[in-house]
Length: 428
Image 1 (tube, one colour):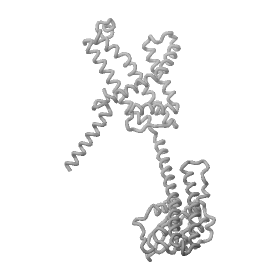
Image 2 (cartoon, one colour):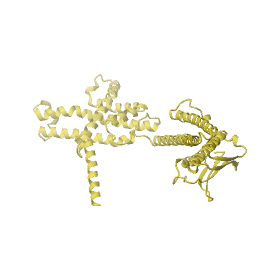
Image 3 (cartoon, one colour):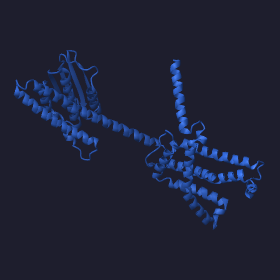
Image 4 (spheres, helix red, strand yellow):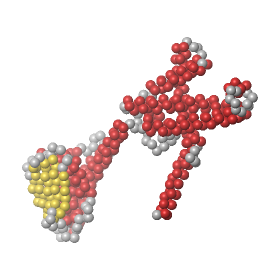
C-alpha cells in the first residue's frame, strides 16, 4: 500500500509539475509566467478592439459638447470610453461575435480545458452573455492597454532620468524616491494585468460556453447519432452476417456433394449467387445512409415479410428445413413492423444455422391483440453448442423490438430445444 501511495504521490507531483510547466514553470505562472503573457496579449487585443468604438464615442462626445478638440479634455475621454463600451455591447449582439471571441480565447489558452462555444449565438440569452463578455473584455483590455502604453515610459524616466521636469510635477506629492515609485508602477501594471486576465479566464466558460439549451440540443444530437450508429450496426450485422453464414454453409454443402449430387450442388451455388446479390443490395442501402446520400437506395430495398419465402429457401438449401405457418393479414403490416419482423426472423434462422446445424425448425407468424407475434423453435443440434451468453444478434433483436415498444426473448424451451419469441405492436 505504501509503495502504491508513493507511486500515486509521484504521479500527482508529476501532473502538478506538468501543469506548472504549462502555466509558466511555477505556481506564479498566472502572475509572471507564460500564462500571464498570453492573458496580457488577450487583453491588448481587447484594447485594440476598443479603439474604433472609442474614436466614434470621442466624435459623438465632441459633437454634443460642441468641442472641436475633445482629446485634450480628460473628462471627455472618459465619457467617450463609457460610450464606446455601450456601442460595443450593441455590436456584440451579432451572432458571429461569439465565434470570434471564443476562437481568440481558445487560441490563447484563456479557458484551459473548459468548453467554449464554437457556433454563432442563436438565442438572445446567448447573445446577451456574449455582449457581457465583449464589454468586459474591451473594458479590461482598454485599461491594461492604456497602462501598458503609459507606465513603461514613466518607469524608464523614474529609474534613469529622475531629474526630468515632468517627474516633479506628476510624482512630487509622493514622499518616495523616484526609483521606488517606478518599481511600484511596474508592480501595479503586473498585478492589474494578471488580475484582469485571471478574471476573464474565470468568466470565459460561463459567458462564452454553450448555454443550457445548446448543451441539451448537443446531447440530443449525440443521442440521435448514437441511435443511428446502432441502427446501422444492426443492419450490417443482420444482413451481411446472415449472408456470410448462409453462403459459407451452402458452399460447404455444395463442396461435399459436388460429385455425388451435382444437381443439389448447382442449386446451392445458385442460392449462393442470389444471397450474395441480395446482400450487396442491402449493403448499398446501408452505405448510402453512412454517406448521407441525398438519394440512397430507398428503404424498399430493405426486405420485409413479403420476402420471407426466399429467406426460407436460403436456409433450406443450407440444411435447415423450416415449417412456416403464416397467419392472415401479415401482408398489410406497417412497413417498420414488417422490416423489424423480417430482421428478427433472419437473425433467428442465422443462429439456427450457426449453432444447431442441419435441423428442422418451426416458424409461426400471427396477428393477435393488436400485435405481430413471432415464434421460432428448433432443436439444439449435437456437437454445436451455443456460445455462452450469445452474440450481438440477440441484443440486436431485442433492440429492434424495443424501438417498436415490443419485446423479444430467446432461450431454452425446457424440452431440449430453443425458442425465440417476439411481440411487435402494430400501433407503435
